[in-house]
Every structure is written in structure tokens, then in C-alpha cells.
Amino acid sequence: MASLSSHDITMIFLALGVLLLTARVLGELAKRCNLPSVIGEILAGIILGPTLLGWWAPEINSALFPLKGDVALVLDGLTTLSIVLFLLVAGIEIDLRTVWRQKQAAIGVALLGMAVPFALGFTSAWFAPTLLGYQPGPPRIVFALFLATAMSISALPIIAKILMDLNLYRSNLGVTIVAAAVLNDLIGWLIFATIIGLSGVSHGSGFTPGHIFFFIIVFTLLMLTIVPWGIHLVLSWILAYSQWKGGVLTFALCLSLFAAALTEWLGVHAIFGSFLAGVALGQSSHLRERTRITIDQFISYFFAPLFFASIGLRVDFITHFEVVLTLILLGVTLTGKILGSTLGGRIGGLNWREALGAGFGMGAQGTMGIILGVLAMQLGFITQQVFVSLVIVALVTSLISGPLLQWLLHLKRPRQFTNYLTSEAFIRRLQGKNSEEVINELAKVLAPLAGLDMATIVAAALAREHVMPTGIGQGIAVPHARLDGLLAPLVGVGLSEGGIDFDAPDGIGAQVICLILTPLQDDGAQLEILADIAATFKGRLKSEEIIKISGHTEFLALTRSAHLE
Image (cartoon, rainbow, N blue to C red; front, side, top):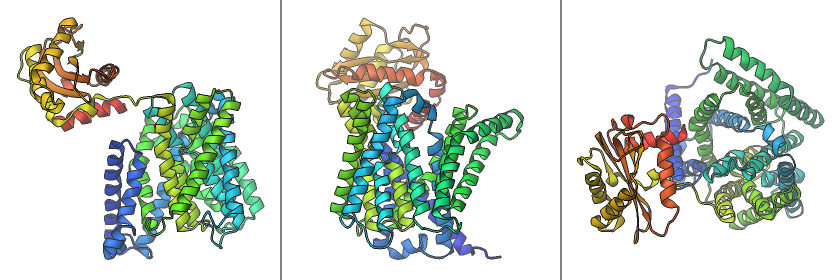
């Protein structure tokens, strides 16, 4: 039996470790810059791939990420598994009930939001194929159908994240956009699966294109109707009688792999089966939120970064970047998506501002557009130049969708107090014995950061303290002041083991004291930061727990994890 050599195993583990570490670090940096983490993950692949590392140190690049041989096959298999499991997560996110709840508006946005860009994309690719990067090889009809699909699909995970960031996820407009994205994703993947089946690309199944199209329709209907009912019964049995704690997780992964194997055998790509398995699984009320989060984290923190980082390993993004092609694809995509979704929203009963908001929200292609591009390049539908342009279009549309919504609806991103807290403004052990002494301590470290006199800060904070005590209970106090000349909000945090009397309603001394400074002209900053502090410390995160931490980094870890619970 053939087996990997010791050297091959070493290089596989080394390559995976380097790829995953770089992807996670750059993904985290992207999030800190208010960008989708997928941008950092793709950038990791660009750095480690032929674009940079391959140019600077080709020997290292070819040793870590070879294009041929056993190591290349293993890495390719892992990235294929990664995208199959990522589509499982994307499918679980889909709640078909939201489509029916919104009905007219969501269906209008989804259908026209797909039909208009699809028509624009197909017409452009059919009548001007060379301009859009077509080269002889695949049938022109396949190329045109693929580009039309790529330009009309939306990215539900990215859209949901944007709406959550803007506090719109549970609003009427947010639910409409999510419902439309659900329907859009389903239609988009159904069309793409059909294109693969009808393209003549053989997977060894031996089925004719007509049979493949029939199987796609039947499989989709079963996964949306009968299979969810069966899954619900199986999950009920697992929860009632299974002794293994990971029973639901194991079942979900097995279902995904079996469905992926089936659609690959039928002649469609494996990801289509995994996606529909996720959709079917997500409809069961037995799939608890905690299990959803576990599945999401298990896949999103290992498999997804590996896949998105591997994108940069596939092609030289500098050599194959074409400005004109990218601008044309971006222009056609944005025009079709925003115009179609806006018209669909108006027909569905939304006012002009809400309809345009739906158009901006649906414009994000993100992960789905990138995945389509990867698969199309693997199947030979598009060239490397078109692939690079599609990746850039997907990233740009995801980047501008949120700001456009924010501008249109005059929204502000919710402020978290930890964003205004630096290590210099964190005091591990306060020396003060009363509220005035503590405010002085915190003002002393904040004054240099604020560019203001310490006495000015103390006077303003104490004046506010005399109007109304700032102890909010549970061992937390939030003295605050609005200051003329302050350019941006600042927060100082100090910990006191003995507790400081800030006249809290529950009579408990404050062990966590947050001094909040906000600009005089920024009316909403103080209330938003106060609300965030109250929300952070409400629930399981207690002052007794925080007082045990070792420093600023651990404080951030605790408070930010509280936001995720």
C-alpha cells in the first residue's frame, strides 16, 4: 500500500501550520480594521503564494506549497474538504421561514435582485466575451452563464455580519434583506449546479446532462421538504438516547459528507450537496444555538481560513491582474445588483429609501462570489485573469456594502467601550480609598492621552458625580465627563479589591471603575459607551471575576468574550 514519506508528512504539517497561522493573524488584523476577516485570510495566501513568496523565495514557496506530487494532492484534498464544510455552515445559516415571513418584499428583492444582474452579466458575456476575459476553451454559453451567476449571487454570511454590525439584523429591513439573500443563495447555487451538470465537464458519473438536471431538481426538492422532517426525527432520537455528547455535531458532519459524495457522484460539485445538507439541518428546532455555534467555530476557525488562504496559492495576483476587466466586472455587478434589488423592493412594497437599502445590502458577494470563482477556474470555465478580477470584485462589494447602508440610513456603528481603552489607561490596583481619589488616579493617566489638564478632567468628573452618583451596582461604577477640546472618546479603567463607595443602588462598593471622557460636541457617545458597559457586565461577567485578572490584555479577553455570549 502506498504511503506518505516522513519528509512528505513533515512538509504537510509545516505548510498547514504556516498557512493557518498566517491566515488567522491577518484575519484578526482585518477585523481590527473593521474589515471582513476573509480579506486578511486571502491576503495570507497572496503573501505565501506565487505573488510574493514565490517571487521573493521561489524555493521556499515550492517546498511548502508544491504544485505536483503527494504533498500537493493532500493539500488540495484538505482545501476541498474545507470548502465542503464551509458550505455546510453557510447552509445552516439559512432559515427558509424568514422568506415566507417577509413574503412579497423578500421575494421581490431576491428575484429581481438576481434576474437583473443575471441578464446584464449574460448579455455582456455573450455579446462581448473578449472584453470580459473569455478565451477559447469552454463553450461560450457556459462562460456567459457562469459570469451571469457570479454577478448575481449574494453572500449570506457577509450580509448577515454587516447587518449585525449596524444593528439592523432584527429590523424589518434587515429581515427582508436576509430573507432575500437566503432565496438568492438557493437559486444561485441551483443555477451553478445546473451549469456544471450541463457543461460537459465529466466527473465519471456517466449520466447525461438531461439526467443530471433532473437529479439536481429532485435532490433539491427532497432536501427542502422530506429530508428536514427526517433529520428532525433523527436529532430527536440522538438527543434523547445518545450517550455521546458530540452526537449532533457528528451527525451534521456525516450528513454533509454523504450529501457531498452523492452530488459529486451525480456529476455536480460536492459543495452543492453539503450546502443543501446544511439548509435541511438548519430547519430543525433540535439544532440548538449552542450546537450551531460549535459547528460554526469548529469549521470557521480551522477549515475556512485554510480554504480562503489557499486561494492566494493558486494564482499570481499581480501578473494576472487586469484593471479594465476588473472595473467592467465591478461596474456591471454593482449596477445590476443594486438596480434589480431596489426595483424588487419597490414592487414588494418598500419605500424608496428601504428599497435602495435592500439594494446596497444585497450587493455584497463576499465568500460566495469567491467560492464560485475558485470552482469555475478549477473546472476550466474561466482564465486566471477573470478569477483574479472576480475575487477583487467580491471583496470590493463586501467592503462598500456596509458603508453605503450606513450612509443611506444615517446609521452609526455601535460603540464598545474597550475600543477607547488603552493599556496606558488601565490600572491593575487602584490606591485610592474613596471616589475622589480614584477619579484623580484615573484622570492622571488619561490626561496625557486626552491632551488636557488633569485638573480639568477631575473637576468635570466630580461635578457630574455631585449631580448624581455613578455607581450602577454589581460592583461597577462609571464616573464620566464631557469635555471641550477632547477630540475622541477615552476610557480609563481601574480595579479595587476592597471596593469604592460610589453610592450604588445595591450598596455594593465598586471594584471596577470606568472613567469615561467624551467630547462636548458628541452628544451620543457618552450614552452609547455607558450602555455598552452596562450590557457587558450584565449577566455572567461579575466584578469579583474581573478583580482576579493579571492585566489589560486579560481584561480585554474577558470583556470581549462577554459580547460573544
